[in-house]
Length: 613
Image (tube, rainbow, N blue to C red; front, side, top):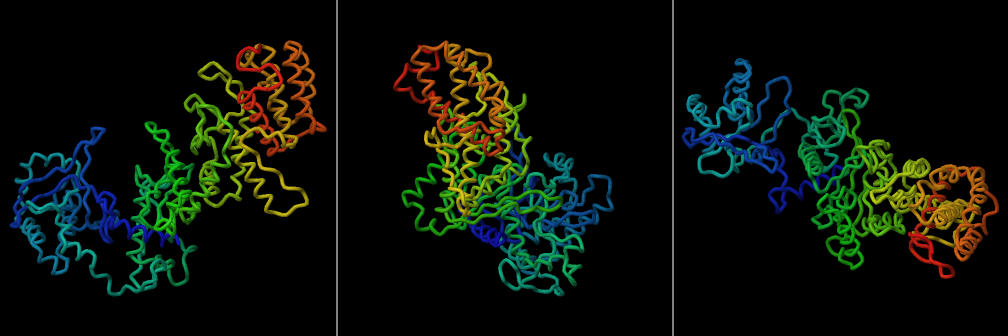
């Protein structure tokens, strides 16, 4: 399924209207060629052309050409067709190994001479053979670019004078490359991808760009030990999972294209390199990467705009027609020694894709401050549950399990009834409990339960509740948590979280308002209150009496009334809260505190951020 989808994507991209996005045909590849030998039809050298130009970073970058696919280089001699390093192409020694260089050049010429007669009759091939027949090193040494090419043993190719394309790009040569005769003894097998009887690819091309894998690339399909091979298929490993040469080239080229640097269809979440594509052209093909990827510094609202565009299109019915049956693919890849493992794979129509992304952000929806983002990025959500360091003040993601980010994305696209990984909730609750008092840039104390962390807790708990409601039990289903304060929620942990927030607010009001105290009960008691309530709340309720005496009669009465409402359904202080209940405690605390700043009580003197009147 995955290889077939990548093969279909490759076929579409071969005919892309944008030449820069067009993928090479089978037997060809995109290659940077720094130098081009421009010759006449008589084989005379015109110039050694330097194709390199300065990029934005003032670094020379060579022009990219579509050339015959290169061979896998090993310690032996293996020449590419019509392009290669200076030693192969010209037979000029650059490393003090003249005998080996002579052998390399001989192989290079032999590959050209082995082309079918139709290709050898082309004027460009005849010109190259004439060039070799009358090779003049002195002419080359007189070229101004020769010294740079010689120093780096640069890659080069040929072009006829006044032509635009390289010799290897001429129609007769390309046709010969695509129809080159295979080994007559090669057996045909049914391709698992296309279903056609075709020559099977023995060794598949490497996949590059997967974070953590070998820099030279790794394979999805490979057999390098007898333990993985079928009986009688030990010599030709490819026959264990027969994929034709054309299909193997197609899926590896497509995947390398999706994983390329600066790709708008790829994101990195933890150790999962995740790519997105569609069956047909669509403006939403990169929407998942825009939404879940890191927003660019110069455009922090890019993800929010992409999400709005997706949801608006689905709600207005714009996704009908072409996109109605257009499937969108999400593939997560992770390194596994010399191989690449499939972390997850999803194939969804646009409407379902938008529905699941929308549910993800609905689960995260929380009452928020003025500057908190409506749709927090995945990176921000991961940073919210991390320990901050001097180098990573917003949270060091490297301290989290490397597979956490990929597991979250997998849960998003699997469906709304699939819980988020428990490690995410564990990390969020752990940070709430362990967070120490910090000062923000405005001089205020940072909350133990900030917006993004509260959103994570709510999303994880709601998905757990949703999953448990599917499984029949004797207990009544728990109500999902709302984005804002829920006065009807009688869960003990949620109520005690609200209670703790009110007790902290009383302490702040008695001191003249928030920010007046160097530390509050939150800094000393939050961890114990959220995990072992019975050990803390009796003491806190006794201390609050002293704080209430410092308030006006109206304020004290209002707080007493609020405490009574919260404690009305609390029959006892539990000895211990398990981790999910600690999350409920955090939500109660966050909701109640947000409510203090969101509205004013109707029956008492308003309590504001400043001094209470």
